[in-house]
Image (cartoon, rainbow, N blue to C red; front, side, top):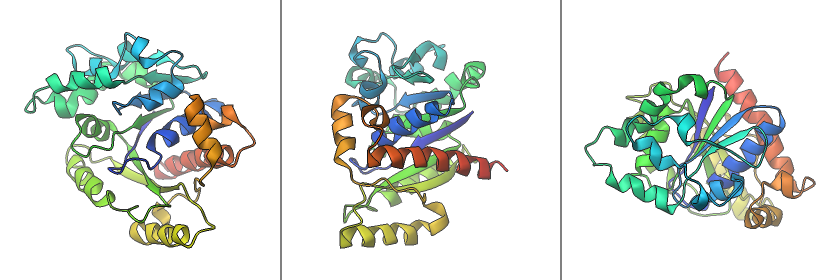
Length: 264
């Protein structure tokens, strides 16, 4: 069971789209996946849940209560092989009641994980969709329990790397309590190779992270991805012939290969 956070301080870079579509394509490979929606907007929950996340009794806010476990908060998704710990704006507000000095602000997830390790070991992969807020209780908790993290970087923005330094500063602090945390790779998203800007930013990302730390798979700008998000479906479920579907199928393969290489 490997836990991977998908994180970037910058919004609109494809964190949620990557989380949901990567989980879908891993499940298509007969892998069991748990998705933890750490973004109070709850977009991953809207895509994966069988019903509106506002209709679910279970949600991520429960993980910060006494005696909470991951199994008590997880629900089956509309896609076979995927379970979800859902989030929504109401659930997100629960965390406001957690005192700033309360250790649960940092180890709520880890405490729940330790209580429920047998349940967690039933999954091959756990993917955590992180919020863009760098000081978020959810981001801290996600990184504390993660083995790896992925940084989606928008290849179409001149400010693509603007939030990365801040995220890496948080990561460096978390490593003090979670030394196993490693960068699995930066992922270029919303890439349009027809533009000069796209090529420049792609080269800048490789120079910043070093080429070996950047996924070879690139997620190209594709209107079908946007349409599938609007429809509340993963892209390979929405249109299996779309370029975006092929991109995320390739990402699932490279994702598994990278984790395997880290673990010998």
